[in-house]
Length: 203
Image 1 (cartoon, helix red, strand yellow):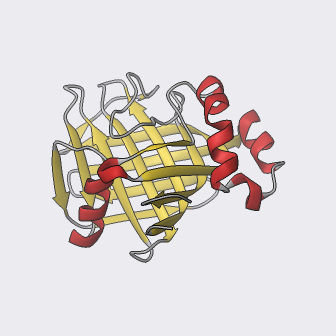
Image 2 (tube, rainbow, N blue to C red):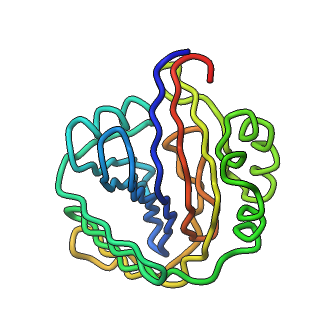
Image 3 (cartoon, one colour):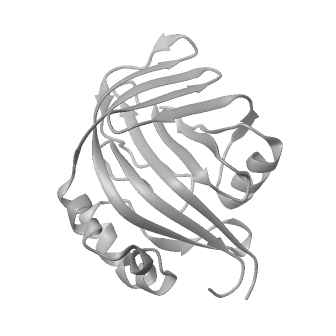
């Protein structure tokens, strides 16, 4: 068995009418402690990582694909009704709404099974059908394998997003899909409870 990195927390996917698309990771537990990061794709396709430490930035950038990496202060606060993110040139105030039908189905799966690599490898094709662009298993950078174990999913119902001090537009689908790795987030803005596992070698 090779090296294993586990990240436990939430991922939010938020799109705007200007074409700015963001994927926010709020990690309560990780190899780098509790932290937040933002993967951002501009309308031009330019992919940017905003990370709070060089150590976290190096690992994320070696697992996903970016055109630019910035290490700066990233803070995120999440509760049952709101996600707030401040990350240098980016600010997000998003409303968290009701659990989705898929979220209700995910909660029916025992969490120990829902995050197991064999289960995630088996259900990955189904995930792509229920949430176009999303996968639960695939290959990442540097020959690594990656698994996304979802256990809950809520709609994001509103968002005020500013980029470099300017309004990025109204809340919109994450289209086209982001291209940081093998998987995008669901097209409809959402907040997922997730356990991400990155492996070198076999699980």
